[in-house]
Amino acid sequence: MEIKGKKISILGAVRSGIAAAKLAHTNDAIPFVSDLGDSEELKASCSVLNELNIEYELGKHSERVYNCDFIVTSPGIPTHASVIRTALEKGIKIISEIEFASWFCKGQIIAITGTNGKTTTTSMCAHVINSSGLKCYVAGNIGLPFSEIVMEVKEDEFVALEISSFQLDFIDEFKPKYSVVLNITPDHLDRYENRFDLYIKSKMRIGENQKSGDFFIYNGDDENIPVGMISDEVNLLAFSLDKGLANGSFIDEGWIVYAHKGEFEEICNVTQISLKGEHNLMNALAVINVTKNLGIENEIIKDSLNTFSGVEHRLEFVREIDGINFINDSKATNVDSVWYALRSFKNPIFLILGGKDKGNDYSKIKEVVKKRVKKIYAIGSSANKIRDFFNPVTKVEIVNTLDDAVRKGMQEAVSGETVLLSPACASFDMFKNYEDRGEKFKIAVNNL
Image 1 (cartoon, rainbow, N blue to C red):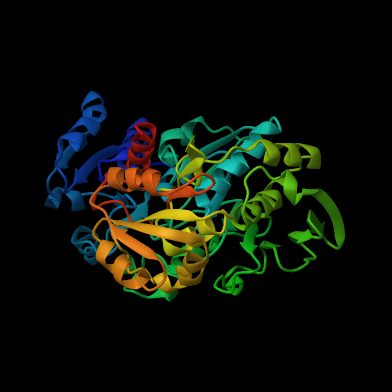
Image 2: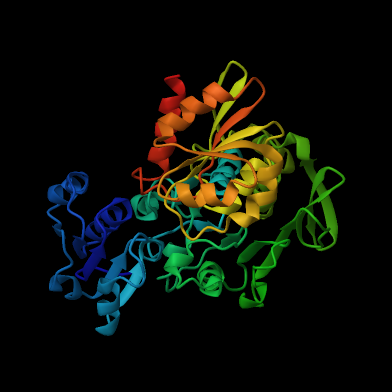
């Protein structure tokens, strides 16, 4: 896409906004960055803009924002924000950062979305591909922004992109070679007018531009994925824990099987997947559907799935003290993630739950909490809601800080039990982000 001389307004001066500005500058456009915030941290992140003589403003969105050929928006800016509404009223084209970066991508894009499992699946997919000798970058909602690495990607290389619904809200021509939808359950409804159908439509945009020769890979056990929205030209591949498939990957008597046009191959035994739990088995099935179609040999896929060690802040083992396991699942920012986490442990759990509530329906985990959770430590602004809901189910104690929760867990748990941070909530009431929350948890554990 030729953007030389184009005036591009970029909303947001954090990671994806800064990366988009650098990409625009590299391609001889004229970027202007605007952010409502004006914190010291934000000012520091703009140092790269100063070095490149890219103009920007902090603490406001001035009229200059609208003096442009198009706008690139960061995923953290809601679609209903006044700057977005005004731009649309003025007829200005708005695109997301992943859309913008995709204009310059020479390699094949593997786009992965879903309410849960995105980070693990994206990392797992890249691990298998890189283990085969091919080159795969990891970007998007995980690690580096797409704009940061896109100019490095060669024609025979791949990019595994973790993509949120927010990043899909303003795509236009974005067309992955492989689209993966892991699952869709209610989340972020505060951003979608409390309408699950709008959230589903946002997720499904990942495949809206795919054509013949492209692949749409989806969870065949999830009734919330409307596969009928995908073009008939696209290759559909399902994955399932519950049923056999003619095309796709599934489980048969403890073996992972890949099917293609009625022919079946055993890839590996489920015991050979390094990450445990049904959710990780589903993630592995999705990855197999991608990597088999890249021509990667079964033995390499099997060995790679066996050596993959997982991702930080997702059911991450931190430390064992006196037989008590401390697990960091800070990335569990919704109720469904907690459901999967609780089902991953057989021994009693002391659960640290809470943060900024997003309209959570805790009834989804009521039964599994009753069976597996010995006590809940409720933290953050949602603590009272958690206490009121779970008091009839298990012991609940409101604690002031994450450090307090860790210390109490150490005092009350016994050998063989688990202290699990799996908050089901956003982190912004107490922390910068889920990574910050997870790091603070690990520091607290290591200070015991």
